[in-house]
Image 1 (cartoon, helix red, strand yellow):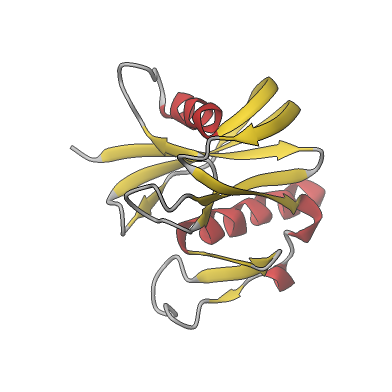
Image 2 (cartoon, one colour):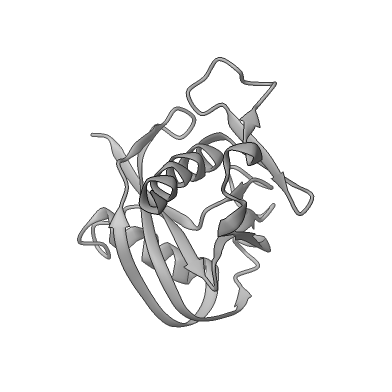
Length: 160
């Protein structure tokens, strides 16, 4: 059976919420990513529930999470999971984060999602998730950059 996960493309005040994973975690330590994690059938009815639950486990958020849509899933070669990106409007405030899971909170202005932001990762030019970019001194790459690249395509279509 394939493992399922979901990540939240949470938009607050025209910024996308990213996190830098804590060194305390067993995988992807120090990576910049979208909040999210694995589907847990005892807590989650559908994959998008996992994105919201994990977001609330990672960040101290007071407010409403309004799920807007779920993008087509991506397959993570590294974690062997099908990952569902969930777009959500966040109406509230992030006051802190769970230090066991998050090392740093990063806000990416949605206006930065333009073609010029992304480049090809020179270390992995021949894989599907080969996009990367830098923001606030952090390197964003792999599945996270790929999902944001796909999300940028959606934003461009909406603006047309």
